[in-house]
Each structure stands twice: as C-alpha cells, then as structure tokens.
Image 1: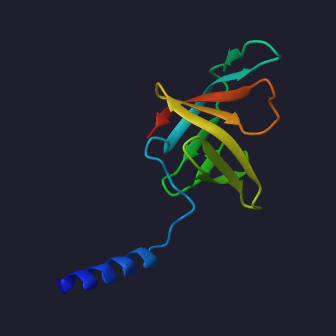
Image 2: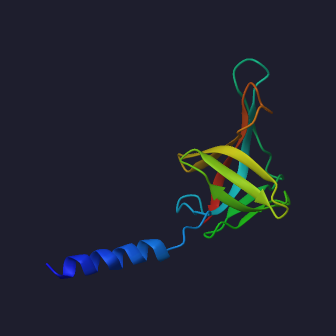
Length: 128
C-alpha cells in the first residue's frame, strides 16, 4: 500500500515532463502521394478531371511533420483533428484542408470559401 503514493508521484512526473508536439504524423498519411484527379463544381454536380500522365504533382508527408508539396512553399504539416490538416510555410503562412483517406486515395479539399460549390484534389500513394 505504501508503494501506491510513490507510483502516483512517478506517473504524475512522467505526465508533466512529457512535451506534446504540435506535429502529429498519421501512419496512413505518411509517404509520397501523386495527384491523379481534381474536382470542382460550377453550381451543379461535381466535375472530376483526371490529371494527365505528364503532370507530376506530389505531396510527401514525413513522419515528423515535414512536408514537400511540389514547390508550393509549404514545408510542414499539422493534423488538427480527424478531418482537418494544416500546411505551414517557413514564414508561418498556413492553409487548412479537409482530408480523408479512403480506398487507398487521399482527398484534400480547401477549408475556405474559395470553392463555394466544392473543389479538391485526389492523390494516390506512390511510396511509403
């Protein structure tokens, strides 16, 4: 029974001493993704356009929040919640996307008013 208070103190010390990082890498998100489809709407149903094979646009999500997004200037990412991801530039500029991974594809849609009728990009994973 005397070890219980000591155990509580040790656990409390461990919880307080651990630093939580703002950058969380999801094991299914990390890796290299290639743009395969873009979609948008002009007021009606969504219009899907496959990207031609000559277009090579990639997003590479590193395990520690590093990001390489085909010369976009974004260098880090942060998962805010189960549906929102933030891309960050070195000058602290940010851009939020809704994201979803389904059927082995990553769907990114801007979380702004820029696409009132809906728009986004679909990527397929090319490297782990």
